[in-house]
Each structure stands twice: as C-alpha cells, then as structure tokens.
Length: 209
Image 1 (cartoon, rainbow, N blue to C red):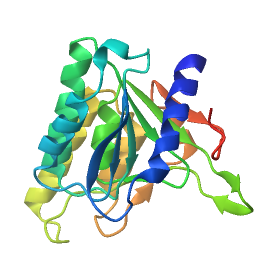
Image 2 (image 1 turned 135 degrees about the vertical axis):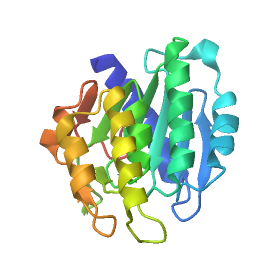
Image 3 (image 1 turned 90 degrees about the vertical axis):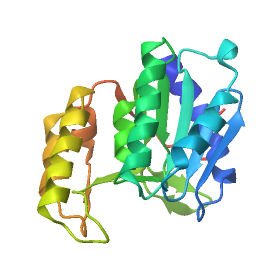
C-alpha cells in the first residue's frame, strides 16, 4: 500500500496544470487522467476518450489514476463513468482516485470515488506560506433544478443502494440521504477511514517526487 500511495500522490502533481473553471478530462501522464470542472451530461464520452489514451501495458499497481477536482453535476454521467471504472476492475485493471489537498470531490463525483479500487485523499498543509485545505468530499440528496421531489428522493435511495453494492460504508450513505441538496455534508476523517481501501496521506505540496 505504501508503494501504491507514493505512486498515486506523485502523479497528483499534474493536477495543478488543469483549468479549474471548465469541464476537462485530460490525460496528463502515461497512467493518469485529470478531471476538473462540473460533470456534464455526455462527459462519459470524454472520460472514455481520455482513458483510452492511457498506456495500459505500463500500468503500475495503482492502475489508472484519476485526479479529481469537481463540484459534481450530472448523476447520469457520473454513474456511466463509475460503470466504466467497475468494468475495468472486472477486467483486472484497477483504478485509483486521488482528491489532492485544495481539491474537491462533491455530489456526483463521490459516485466515481466510490467505484474506485483504491481511494486517496491528501490532508492539508502549508505551501509558500499559504494554508492549503485538505481534499474535501461532500454528499447530498439528488435534486432537479435545485428542487427535491418524491422522485428525486427515490433516485437518491437507489443511488445509495448502488454505492452500497460497491462497498460504500453506512455512515457515508447516511450523510448522503440525510443531507438536503442545497446543503452538502462534508465527509470527515472518520467517514473516510471507515471506507475500505481508502487512504489519507500527508500533505506533500509541490515536492511530490
């Protein structure tokens, strides 16, 4: 696991080069794809295109590394991406999702996080005299145009069921189902530590290699 963590965090250094304000799925190293910006309907195609460029013959035990920094968005697209991650796992290709310090994985992004073989969250630290917050994950119920209905609540329960099937712990699912869509509940260290194959790693700043 120590080797896996070192590999994934080293690859996370590429995240700083990814624009933060637009949806972007970009291969940034032979085994790494950076995802930033809102998840939009149709992004599952962008994801497949970016991952298809990964050189699978050169993968390490970390497998395909996904660096995420997104407020979420389309649940459909996120579920399609998660399905792709699970399909790769069945074929023997692991996926490591990294939420680096200063980055966010919120809402539908957590669905992708849940599907990963290994999950890494970097705690905060100080860089150039500035405090960098820990990587943050937020969950909440589903909504349509900001409105919650019986249909969206039923969809939230179904989403929680799917996430349960891939090993998401009950405390995380409880926060998802009990938090309104206009709020968003941050997962704390206890939540993350209760999640199998999830690692919290120290802050490395720019000196990741």
